[in-house]
Length: 246
Image (cartoon, rainbow, N blue to C red):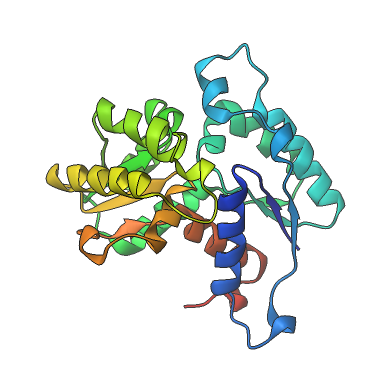
């Protein structure tokens, strides 16, 4: 059974479940894979806040507890749709709780997708939460794979985190739609990365790929990498590769 630790945030969790269904080879209900979801958002502290103030409770401890519960419920392959959660200080206790279950990393799955998309030496643009950018979640994995990370300037990082994601019209506050404000901020950030030579852009917060549903076709100047879809495919492949769509 596939286990999902959700709630970071709930709309990103729903997006992952949608993409697991999309990426599964199935002709009817009975052909889909078993999935168990635990979404207890109120119990999981903010990941960026912890990374910036280590005196706060580590959200990885609660997620580790939820991983244990999923394993008790029969999950053998587990993932969590939150990029910031995968920063080492948070992710390490989660890895310790896996107890032999396959823990699929959204970073590893996304890096593997980029390997299939681009040749080594390509420049990979990054957008994400303040902590994902500040603590360079993707930088070393990309360099190890032969790519050059392209990071947004500080002003763009602030606008993505504080306005597009968490602002009054941000994606986390408007489940079911993406405001024009958030969409325009993301469009502008992608354009700025393209101007700096990015050959693709990773939407490295699990709310950001939701923007793809609303984005104008002319905004996609380079391939936009969706870590949520990469995680969905990684979970399916880990559980039963024969069920993964080509």
